[in-house]
Each structure stands twice: as C-alpha cells, then as structure tokens.
Length: 369
Ligand SMILES: [Zn+2]
Image (cartoon, rainbow, N blue to C red; front, side, top):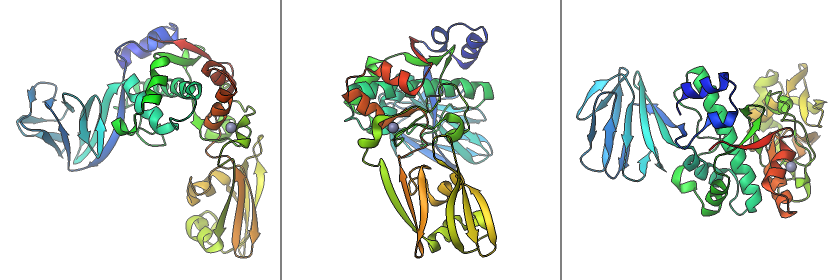
C-alpha cells in the first residue's frame, strides 16, 4: 500500500489496521548522507530511474550527485531518484542491507534511502535495540512496539511529504542492517508478524528505553509528547537492571567546558536540582556562579554533557571539592516500554500482550496483516 492509500484509509476512519499495512508494506530508512558520490556493491546489480533500467556489469556501482542530478555510468543524468537492487543483499555506507537503495540528489549532496519490507527491517532493529538474550515474551513486546512506532512514523512522514520514514540512529530506532539480525530476535518478529499496538484507530508512538529505574516517565515530561498511553507506571526493573543505580563524577572544568554556555561560562559555585517532574526526575537546575544564579533545563545539561555520560534525568547532584557527583537511577528518557522491566515481567511469566498493556495503558494489539 502506498502512502496516499494509507492516509486516505485513515481519513476514512477504517480500522487502523486493516488499512495501515498489508503483505507488501515497506519502510524507507535514511541510512546515510554525504557529498559527492556513493558506492554500492552487490551481486546482479540493477539500476533504474523513472525511465530506464539496466543490469550493471561487475559487482559495484557508483552514483554521483552533480547539480541535483544523479550521475550513473550508462544512464542519462536525471533529477529524479535512482534505485539500485541486487540479487541478495547490498553493501553501501559500511553496511549490508536487504531490499533496495534509493539515491536522491540535492545539489552535490546525496541521500541513501534503504527501502525494504517492514518485517525485514524489524529483524534488524530488534537485534540492535534489545539484547537478544532477553526472554522471548520481552522480545515480542519490543517487536510489536518497534513495528507500531515505525508505522506511526510512516504515516507522519507521508503527511509531511518526506522522502523517508525513519533515520537509522538512536533518534529513530537503531537500524544496523543484516549485521544486527539475530535468530532469537527474528523469532519474536515472526511470532508477532503484522501485530500493531493501536490506540483508537492509529498505531501508537511506542517509545521505549533501556531502564526507567522504578517508575516510567510521562511522554509529556520526557519527550514533549502528551499522549494518554504514555502515562507514568510503576516498573520492577530497579532491582534487576545493571544500570538501575549509577554515579557519575564531573569535574568543574569539564562541566564548564561542555555545558558552560548554558550559564554564560562563569565558574560554578554550586549546582542543585531546582524543580522535578511528577515522577521525580530533574526538570530544572539552579546554577550558582560568580555572576549570579541561573536556572537551566535539566535536559539541556544532559544533552551538553552527553546522553550516555548522564544516563537519565532521575538524579541528585552535589559538590565534592572540585567535582560534581551526579547520583541517579535508570537509563534513557524513561517513557513507554522499559526494556529491563519487560524482561523482569517476562521472567515472572507475563505474556507480551500483558507487558505492552502495562507500559502503554489503554492500547490494544491488533493484527494488521
Ligand atoms: Zn523500568
């Protein structure tokens, strides 16, 4: 089903799911961008644009972008996208990929979009996003969440007229291509094939994170997404996740170098959490400097220090000598499915539908195809 049909079906308020996806549902992932040209390798390469299609001699092909046109040996330069297919997988931008690659040119810049079946995409996403050693019911919950999130983004991208649906990084869902696939993850994708988490008629924005630390955050506080199913719920991960509790030491010098722009680069005398969200996560910090007192959003401090350096916003901070000690819990933004919590619930015998109902209250699993 193409994007137009998809949106039309939604506008007609047909039940999501019969309408939103079928056997041929595919997904478009932006895997790389650059300037100049892109090399693609594979067996039996075939390249096509809107008018022509031919088989490439040899096992590699280069697509260059010049003044907005895709330049491919043997093909008349054109302004439209060029599609490259292979017999089996393709190699491009350092990854092995299933499906085809579409190259789009803007000036001398190129964009490589991997077009592949949604289910094949999920095989790779699941292998990268959740440890495949997690129990099968936790993996199945993650598979349905990732499928729902991808479909939500597909609808959103179509409405905005974007040429791709998702990126390949942690900002979307981590997509590593064939190298990230794992047979245990694939079993979970196959077992839930076509199943989508829906709220009303629509696939949900099924955000997920590593470990909440004991209670999930609301979508409004964590991501600015005030959605009824991204409510805060209790979670059993705290006693089990390896990073449920953490402590990070940041020297004053490092704090000033990485985040000083947030308060005018004055030396920091004191740092304290000045407001918290309803679940206890830091919302703002009070920074006391020689120049005065500033209030800065906690999320901006975390962004400046590094999302991995400061694993979550659920922390206290105190000064010890010339070092600030952040003591916190959980890892990630905290909204939606908690992966370590899902693991604990699965080990306690809960099924993936129960796990999803816990972390996304008010939603239901529906079969799309
Ligand atoms: Zn949790």
